[in-house]
Length: 109
Image 1 (cartoon, rainbow, N blue to C red):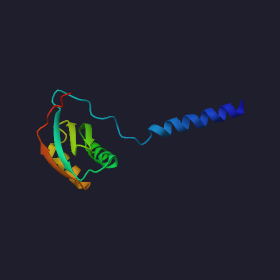
Image 2 (cartoon, rainbow, N blue to C red):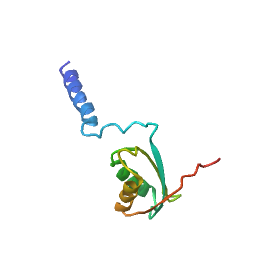
Image 3 (spheres, one colour):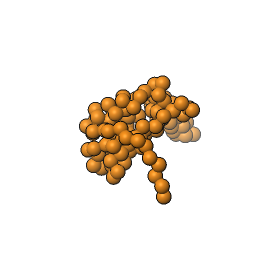
Image 4 (cartoon, rainbow, N blue to C red):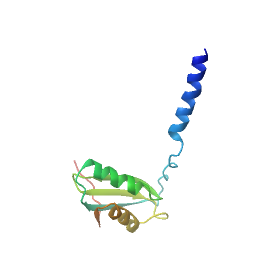
């Protein structure tokens, strides 16, 4: 019985520790959200796209980030009252890639 109590106490600390220190929930999408698309030079692997996504997600107002090293592109949904495409481009460039904003196109197929 004592072992069970100790297990339960430590388990609750572990569960609480999993959520402690995490960022607050992302901004919820609104009717005013926008999407910016970028050609990204220098992304050569999956780790590159993961790095780009993590970096851009640190900006306040980011709703979603998609990045593809295969396509050399990034698509970012954001809340324009909190961040703009120029700041997103700057963040991408700050981690070593070269971003060029482009018109977003829908994939077919």
